[in-house]
Length: 379
Image (cartoon, rainbow, N blue to C red):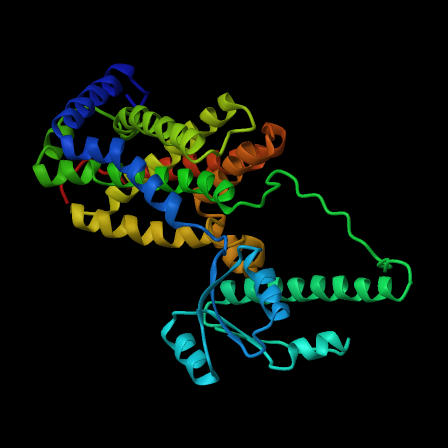
């Protein structure tokens, strides 16, 4: 009698639905928490660097120096937060974090400009945050370079010479995210991360709750098979997870303005596969843990590395090869590729079949291991 019986499976489904209705806090977590996390992380997780606080020491105090300062602020990358009168004041502001960069204009800046002599300006940068430092250096170099070219062309025109033509030009075109906004890249990743965390935690408590409340003893005397029990416990949460996914998908699309360029039906279908995978992973955790506290600890022990290994925060290509292999053991790694591919590039299954296959293999593997670990006996 090892065959799958639909009646036994459906009985577990109905039992789990009744349990979910009685457990209002867990239901609230499944429905409300994804929206709260999406709003929180959607605004908090932003890798775009704008309005870098800049302190200015303008020793020239001329129209030329003010024009140069405007060149920096007009880019909206830099924001003048204060004016200083010496290096001691600049160092104090860089130390306490009230400024991230300092622009120092020498007193002979205007005189050298009038005489067409080379003028040097100085920028001091707080390098404790490499992202801000790199952005400040690259933008400052571009601003000064463009200003130098403009000045040189003006001098040549005054001398009756033709305009300066650069010997090499670059014709660049940014695809999929033309404005290079980080929110367009982050929102699909946040949807996958949030759905993984919420669904896995919910089912991680499933069998553990049975152990703590003593209802596992009732399951022991029934003829139910491990597969029927696992699928029966997962099925209600698939519906709840799919409903939560649709909510965060609508918020991400209409509130944050990140449209889905690809097939909605393909996105939903692969999302169901991902939900099955994460829910089964939660069941696997519940077969290991003996208490709900242990289940929570094991779940977070998996969640935290998955944020780093999946490519959510940092590109996996820059990671060591061993770390990339470890990332292949995280289902979120495959789902992020699917989400960003459908959201941004409008790709179809021909480009995503490897990621879908990876998730499917992970689901079957975890389901098999969970069934093998489940024992209908009191330990």
